[in-house]
Amino acid sequence: MPALPPPRFAWRAVLIGWLLATVFSGAPSTAWALATGGDPWEATRAAGRMLLPQAQALPVLFAAAAVVHGTLSTFWALVCAYTLPRHHTGRWALALLTAVGLCHLLVVAPRAFPDVAALAFWPQMADHWAWGALMALGLRRGAQRAR
Image (cartoon, rainbow, N blue to C red; front, side, top):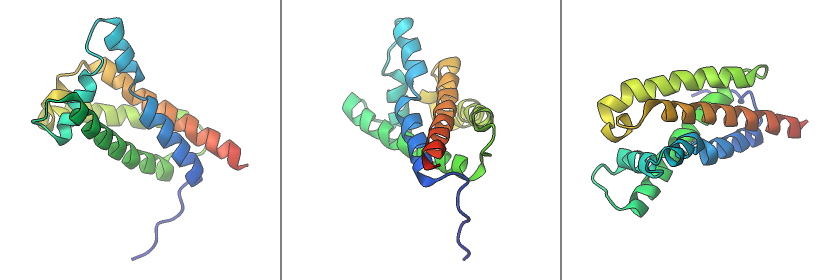
């Protein structure tokens, strides 16, 4: 089996992007929930139920959500590392995460994850955009440091 070609970005840049995107991409939906008097843990519970559909306890759902979000973020960070161009990375990352968000929220969630499908669409879409922007920022910062 042939080896994979190297990614378009240094692994350090990919790690920085992954870390930024994974940790901070939920800020838009959390801010929206707080601003509108909603439950800031609703999206965390929904993500946790992707792995543990019957769970009710917030600490258990928080841990499950961390696994789900970390795993999905790792997958998409690798996709970004191998597919995004070095020029206009931010624009391409936002385009990619728009497509990913639409697929996740309008196709996958309604069929497989009812708690995710029940979340308000635009705050969740904003989280996808934040993920793409933060990933691109990390890739750019990591590429600058590598020089």
